[in-house]
Amino acid sequence: MAGAQLVTLEWDKNTWGVKDAPQVSNLLKTFDYVLHLDLSDTDMSFDGVELTATAIAKMDSAAKLLSLKWSNGKVMGKREELNEKIGMMECAGPYERPGLVSIMAMLESLESLEHLDLSCNYIEQPEMGEFLSAVAGYKKSEEKGEEEDPPKFVKLALPKLKYINLSRNELGNYGAQWIVKLLELIPSLMKIDLTLTRLTELAQSILKDAAAQKGATIIF
Image 1 (cartoon, helix red, strand yellow):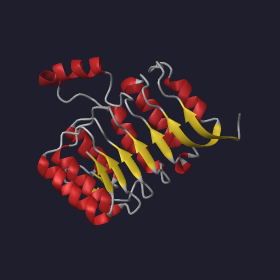
Image 2 (tube, helix red, strand yellow):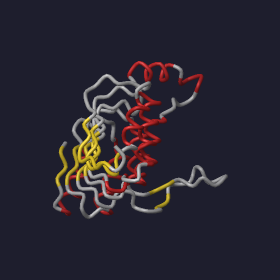
Image 3 (spheres, one colour):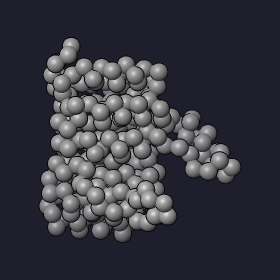
Image 4 (cartoon, one colour):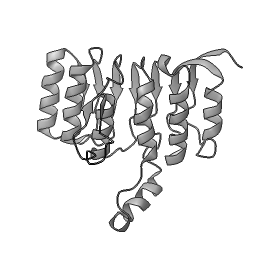
């Protein structure tokens, strides 16, 4: 299959889990390019999402990918894993989220991405803020003593993004500020789905004003 050109790979709505993720990753390597990739409603969990996102980032064709759908993709882990880790937070500190971290790192490779769907992943407010800052091209310093400094702009990660679906995640006021920043930074971004993202009336008002100024559409 070397040299094959795949337009669309729909791997959605299956029960493949973390043990099967290597097969998906190996399959992606066999194509010269994949333009549309759908991994929605899979059961990969923390490690599987991490493995697959890393494989996508390393694809020679990653820069050509136009559409990535990973809704209900367990990027924060399975519900039972998440609940278990939350129950341990008092003694163990914040739960790990390697799947989401890997997706944020993957964004740097997706130069042509126009459509991004991460709905129904139940990403919480702090993590959503970090994710949106990564989409905007902001990074925290890795220098010792500067880890707590605000993220700094490095390079716009998704300069051609037209549509992003973040519904059924927890956006919050902090995340709303980053949405406004994205509307400012990405000229092509004209439609955003923020259904059921726990936004306050004030946050919605700010977002509506930002969208109206640009002529963009935000779905609440």
